[in-house]
Length: 266
Image 1: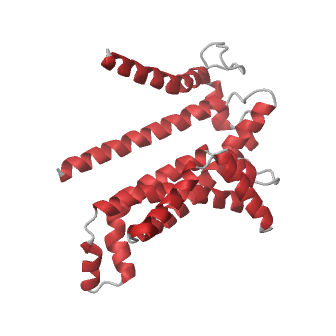
Image 2: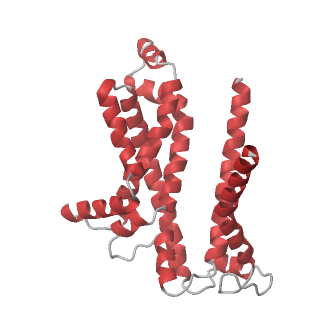
C-alpha cells in the first residue's frame, strides 16, 4: 500500500507539472485566440511566429532577443565568477569556509521580490541608469551561486595534489589553472552555466525591478504586460512549445553523454 501511494503521489505530481505544458502544446496547433477553444488543426500560429506576420511581432521578437542576450552574457560571467569563487571557497578552512558558503546560499534562498527591490534601491543609490547593464548585473548576482554549488563537488572529487604537481613541474599558476584545474572542473562549469542560463530565462521579479523605464522587455515581462492588456498573444503558445522542446532535447543529450562517460570510466 505504501509503495502504491508513493507511486500515485509521484504520478499526480508529474501530471500537475506537465499537464499545462501539454495543454499549451496541443492548443498551439489551432488558430483560436482564446486558450482552450479548439477551432480545428492548423499550423498558422507557427507560420506567424517565424514570418513575423502577427500583431506586435517586433516587440515579441525583441523580447526574445533581449532574453537570450541577457541570459547568455549573465550565464557566461556567472560561470567565470562562480568557478573562481568555488576554487577560493574550496581552499578556505574552518569558520571562514562555513561563513562564505552560508553567504553564497543566501541569494538562492532569498525571495526574488526582495532581491529585485534591494538591487533596485542599490542602483538608485549609486545613480546607475537602469537598462541592459543593471539587468545583466542583477542576473549575474543570483546566477553565480548556482555555479559555485555546481563546481564545488568537482573540486572535492579532484585529487588535491594535481595542482601542486603541475607547479612542481614548472607550470605557472595561470597555466596550472587553465590546463589542469579547468579541464577537471569543466562538467561542473557546464552544469552551472546551464543552471544560470535557465534561471535567467525564467526570471521575472528581478528583471521587472531592475529594467528601468526605457522599454526594455524580456520574455517574462512581455508576457506580464501582454496579460494585463486582456489576453495573451496566441503566438506565445508555439513559442513556449518550442522552448520546452529545445530544453528537453538538450537535457536528453547531456544525460546521454554523461551516461556514456560514466560507462567509459567504469
